[in-house]
Image 1 (cartoon, rainbow, N blue to C red):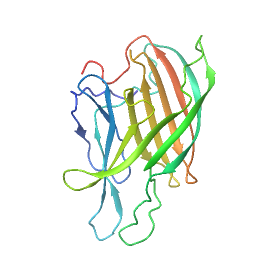
Image 2: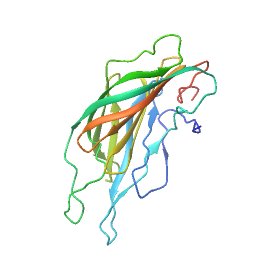
Image 3: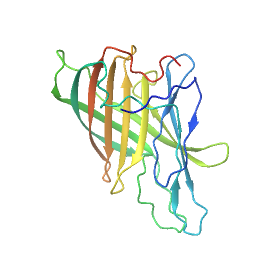
Image 4: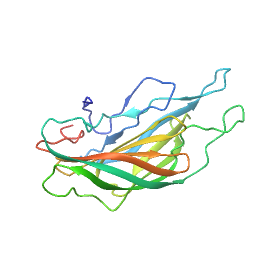
Length: 215
């Protein structure tokens, strides 16, 4: 089970640098609604190898995750499908060659369908879910990637995107009900043809699972 890291509103915790795409997490706003803009540092290395280095992002904590069974009363598996619209082309590598890794900048739109379920009532799902990745720069001028949940910007939401094999991107969108006792853990996979597939988990709990609660 993933550890929950309590933070105060608008506080970010930087992780150490890593040689691949690292997890991106959102921070919570001061009035307990999540500020779903997420920040992930991405910078070109200045070493002679002229390779791309991906730096870990600012984070405020992790979602409990689908393996969290403490207080869970029922769950259902989900299948995900959708498509990706490129927002802007990926920059070339420092040596001028095309960049072929995960490039999540654009609009992710997908829907979920229920598979196996042990819930007495059918899981509640939206017709579709969407988040957008954009680029920018931080105060040091380093390249950044930010993500925003656009289906409902006021929702309790956490987004992360990591690089998988074969130049794919693995996304994660964790949504929580207002009381934090229902979680939609959605894992969209962005394929090289811009199709989206994936899986997810719907869970109901007896206690508040929202990582922003109590901060």
